[in-house]
Every structure is written in structure tokens, then in C-alpha cells.
Amino acid sequence: ANLLEPLGKGFVNVALDSRKTNDGKFGTIPSEETWGLTPSRNKGGKGSAFVYYCDNETVDGVEFPGLPKCLDQTSQDPDDELLVVADMSSNFLSRRVDVSKFAVIFGGAQKNIGITDVTLVIVRKDILSCQPSTSFLHAVGVWSPPTILSWPVVAKNNSLYNTMPIFSIWIAGEVMRGLLDTHGQKGLAGQEELANQKAKVIYDTLDAYSDVYQVVPHQSVRSRMNVCFRIRHGDAAQEKAFLEYAESQLLQGLKGHRSVGGIRASNYNAVPMKNVQKLAAYMADFARKSNPADGH
Image (cartoon, rainbow, N blue to C red; front, side, top):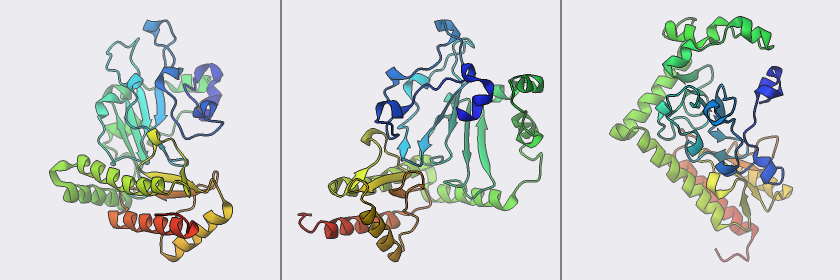
């Protein structure tokens, strides 16, 4: 919403803010009944240009379990339709998605698709003809994007309008081929099953030692890609010891985001099950040693 402030507050509606119902913190997704979506014109409202949400939030480890029911609409009436735009940068290719229910899905490659330099965008074809004019954008204080970021131009030129980052695209192709080789006919269903299994191993360990570890998000919205937790409710010395010893075991990159601290285990597709099991074993061992009176 902050990026759209030049349009003016009357043009941007923040439908939900979990901090308002979670003691000023993220970590939950409020019930859909409490969302303040802009009513469609058929329902007496102004209607909205689009509805945007991020499918998986990486700082606090919050993931939508699926497409929200209130956004799952197939109305063909332009006065009632919701154009859903989803950022799936951090969980793309980790589960099946019905792309027909979205106007736009986009994601950076650097989590599950490949390396930086590539952005994957899935756009409904009719949306390509709905671009606002340059004069309109300038009138409301928004500059039009450069030509290489114009989706109609990119689509018309088969994504070859400009010289592409060939190596990055090759890596993405190898990732796709690897998924097909690994899961065969199962396709994304196979990767979804594996992602769920890996996440379960970590969360089961955290829950087994809940006196030591506290998972940041609510259980109903735990991310499968980013497992965020604290040690003894944010004990700085314990968290430092956890990270230092983990490094010595070659369990790296576990420090939480700089804005919130804590511990964050990234569980992207490239992380194999054996690494997840190694992390879980370390977590259990650390918990036992930090609480020798525990019966586990």
C-alpha cells in the first residue's frame, strides 16, 4: 500500500492488517469475515482495480493455506469481478495452484525457481489489453514503466524484447527439468507432498520442545518455506548459542530477519530432506542440553 501512496489514500484500501488483532505484531491472518474488501459495484460499492496479496511472507513465516474463499470468484460480470494479483515469489513451485483463478501471478526466481535476474509472470491474456494510458498515470502522479517492463510489449515479443539473462534462464530451466525428473507424472503434486513433509519434520520438533522453542506465527498459517521461531521467548544468549553451534555443524543461514531477530530456517525446494532431518536432530539435541531436566 505504501508504494501506491502517490495515488492518494482514497485509491488504496488496506483490507486487513493482522497487527490490529495480534498485539501489534504480524503472525496471523484474520478471519475473512473481518476483511474490509472494497465492495463491488453490484453490491453498491466503487469496485476495485485489483486485489493484491502476498501468498507467503518470509520475515515472520506466514503463509496462506490456499486461495482465500472470498477471493475465489469466477464472476464474468465486470461490475462484480475481482482481479486477484498474487506475489508467489517465495512459495512458487512448492504446491499446486489453479492459475485460472488469478489475474496475475508473479514471483522472483531466487527462492524456488533459480537465481536472481529472472521474474516469472503469469498474466491473464485479457489483462494485457487493460493497461492505463500514460497520460492517466501521469495525471495521478505515477510514472509509466519503461518499455522493457510493459507486459503487453513483453508478451508480443515472446519475452524477447530485450537481451535476456541467458544463464539465469538456463538455471531456471534446469530446475524445472529437475522437478520433472524427480516427481515424474506427479509433477507439482509430488513437490507439494515433499514440501509438506519437510515442514512437518521441523514443526513437529519445535512443538515437541515447546518449553524451549516458540513458533512465531499461529499454527493455522505456518509457512512451509520459512520456519520462524524464538528460543525461550527471545532469550538473546540462548539464541546466540543456538546459532553459533549450528554454524559449527554447517547448519548455516539460520539467523532471523534483521528487522525481527530470532531464528529462521528456510525450507525452499532446493533443501533436501536429509538436511531438514539434520536440522531437526540438532534442534532436539540443543533443547535437551539446554533443559537437562526435560524427560525427552
